[in-house]
Length: 117
Image 1 (spheres, rainbow, N blue to C red):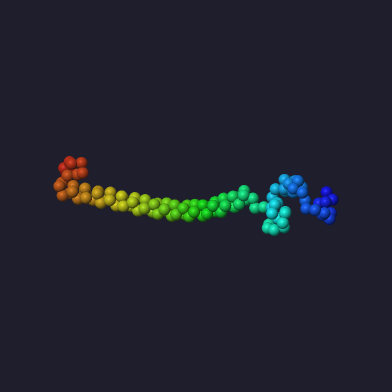
Image 2 (cartoon, one colour):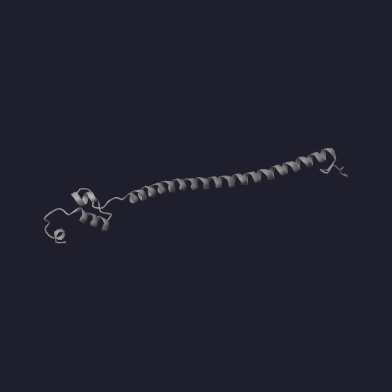
C-alpha cells in the first residue's frame, strides 16, 4: 500500500490496476493509465440509455402531434355529424312537404286512401 499512497518507486502493477478497475468499473482505463480523457467511462449502457431517451423524446413529440391531429379530426367529425343530422331533418321535412303536396294534388293521403273532403 505504501507504494500506491506514498512516493511511488514504480508504476502500479497490472494486478493493482485490475483491482482498482474491478472496484471502480466506471473509471476510464485510458485516464487511469495516462491521465488523458475523461476520468469516468461513458459506458455503453449510458450511451444506449441516452439514445433511447432521445428516441423516446422524438417519439413522444411525434405522438403528441398525432394526438393533437386526431383531436382536431374528432372535433371536425363531430361538427360533420351535427351538420348531417340537420341535413337529415331538413330532408325529412322536405319529404313530408312533397308527400303532402302529392296528396293534395291527387286527393289521396300518403297511405293511398282517398281524402274525404
